[in-house]
Image 1: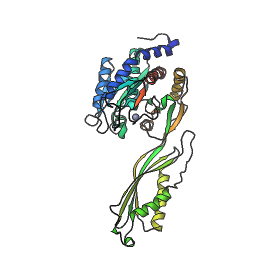
Image 2: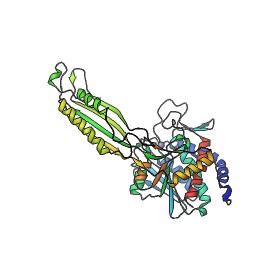
Image 3: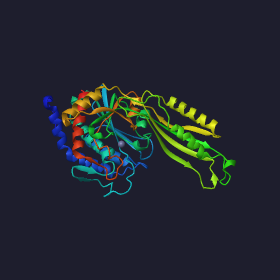
Image 4: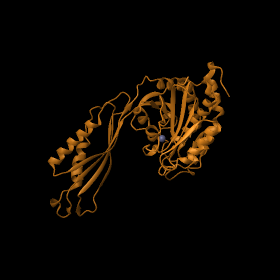
Length: 396
Ligand SMILES: [Zn+2]
């Protein structure tokens, strides 16, 4: 099917995607049934489904595999100076317990597709495969390239997935949309907080529990330092698109028995800081607090940075935000709003490579990683229509 009446392009694409509904459901179910729990991943079995699809449409593609069975697949439609990348991840978090049916035998009910990965992120991939088909059939109209990637390892850091594609496989694009933020297409992720994970170790001296004064209690000292860290002041405390910065005490490990003075205590912290704030300042502040406590109590601490993902932001007036807003308003009747995310997505890595990247997509906020995960079929069809219109606009 080809369109040749640009005036009613929106209706044309809408009708096309309505006709694709069964295919979208079928592809989503196939992808869900490909069990790609990460760990161990095994994304190759989902990649084979996408590969068959690309091959049947003569869409050129490449498979990139950094570790055995941890495959990524990238398909290319159209040629030209500009490019739009859409990446959905093919790994899922472990299913967990308490499902009413087998999470890897997808089922539909009440206008929704159920199964692990339905809303995070395989439903979106199925919807984007319908867009790929549409664009392939209308390839002659494209003056740029649509790149659809099914990526590995998103749920555990992306080192075998998008990070590998960007750093080692030469994957590039001018623009990117990552459909992994849910919020029913009502939010455009344009900025993300920094995520600083830290470990603090308190070193004490072991002794008999009946004579604690002869030892140094690593737990008490840790409590002193944590009480002060709880009051940590951030340099930047507000941002027009973000909630305030946050600090989570995620774990404490120490001690073996009531009658032993513990010599070691470890805690882990998750600090989410705003763009414009500096992780160096935060670490310096914490080091200052630690020094004070070391002097006041006979304490000794180590501070270790586990990881630091820098905050990112793209300009709000970039063309993707405008196109997403315009087409979503036309199709759904509601205009999505640019927002800041407290969680980190792969959008970060794209922005750091100079790609104008935003997060946008279907799915309820509460479905990702949940038991009986599901997604609305209508949302997947609407999303395909919106994304096809965006691709046509930005690539022609
Ligand atoms: Zn996801």
